[in-house]
Length: 73
Image 1 (cartoon, rainbow, N blue to C red):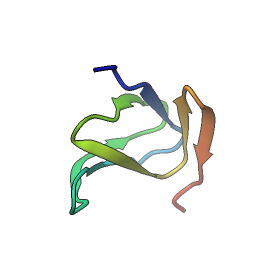
Image 2: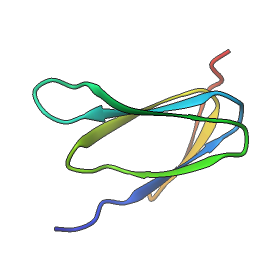
Image 3: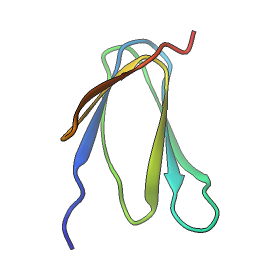
């Protein structure tokens, strides 16, 4: 089994939420983290996590490049 790439979420404002969503027939929230300005979270998709929702201004670094999410305000 190959190891999935990591993504790095870099909060650009206080209160950025990172929410993990499950795999399977019913997609559900299974994990949530709150980041403040300057905090960084390293995450990876797994056999249990099929998607991530990021709410708030953040930079998301991956092997595909950098994406910026908009402010929640």
